[in-house]
Amino acid sequence: MIRMRKKIWLAFAAILVLTILAGVIDYPKGPDLKIDWGDFKVDKEIKINLGLDLQGGAHLVYEADMSNKAPEEYDDALAGVKDVIERKVNALGLNEPVIQTNKSGNNYRVIIELPGVTDVNEAIEMI
Image (cartoon, rainbow, N blue to C red):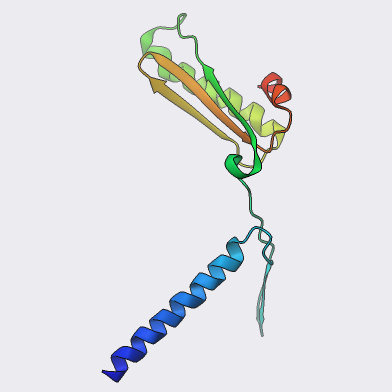
């Protein structure tokens, strides 16, 4: 009975330590990770990238005009548009942009999320 309680308390302590460590690492202004145990050394800067919901930015939705394409070419055409937009967005040097395609009925869309963009018109012109 005593061994069982000891195991439970050790498991609880381990979970508590891991929870505190995860909280310190996840805290946006938290400290960098520096561990120095003899020959074992870790010096890691922890960088947190804020998303569109926390940092602000632009959420753009473009609808594709597929009137000049055959129905069997729709998916390839939309994938090509996505690739071109990804290259242009990556040239902006933004942190973690999201480019997605969406099909809803006969509507084909490209959804672009650009966290940290302050000038939406400039981003639209670049795309």
